[in-house]
Image 1: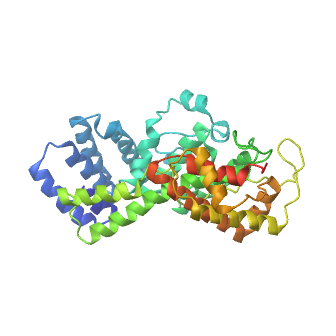
Image 2 (image 1 turned 90 degrees about the horizontal axis):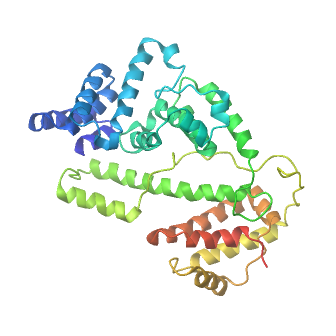
Image 3 (image 1 turned 180 degrees about the vertical axis):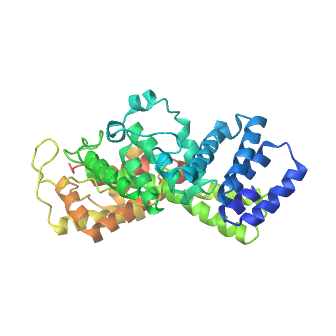
Length: 376
């Protein structure tokens, strides 16, 4: 664990010293050679990285839940990139060279037909979030391809955005893919289960919920880096106790892909819904402001997020007073007013924060009902 932490901090010389010590103590250990393979990948010594990864796989082919083979694919591909850049960039490091149909109309069947393993998602996320490849554009690019092939367009858009941000060689082409994905996103039907003819604002709020999970993981990662810099002995029992205590505090989960840039705001630019029904005119700003203020009061007052749904709704009604109308027109006004939109999201995130200790969806359901359902 100490060596992995040092690798994430890019203190590669220090990590090499730790791993050399480990190699003397445990020369036949799987983790010894797997971590050396990771180190040499980051130092650019790809031939030695491949030797170490192969030794690790020979010792235990199923270690790391069978994910080490993806590390091997990355090392082999990076060597190919060094020898023939154009040939390597014809596909990602998983070997995928998606057609337009696969990239922009992906689905479960397309993913299965391409013989892709769902475990690949976890493997690439682990590379990014655990082993320090968060600034490696080729990993984000491959993750974007997998997500697009599976039909997860919003997440594919976000993964591609990270590949561009880290200067992937195909950045210009990736931006064009993002534009087409954004168009496909806007053409989708409204999210099922949310009232209203055109509830792309609701989808955006649901996406914010997932971003909250990613922010929690990022919060833990920031703490971990600072703790290691301060000298926390993460390889000892006391160090592990501190790590687990912090993890329990933030309750991190695997990030959906990134905690960075949002996919496009999902409001089609035309004056009609996808079904051709005209949208209502935006509500007056005063009505939108009243709804946001009500939610802010409710977020501050709402205490027991683990309570039964009916009780929780009753508590909101008593604490915050009558709920203003939450019509589609009101939501459109909020969406078009940056200050109101920022206040709304802050209040909603506050409600979600309170929901996390009991890992319940009830608080989110309460907030969603308050925001998206029409008043009766």
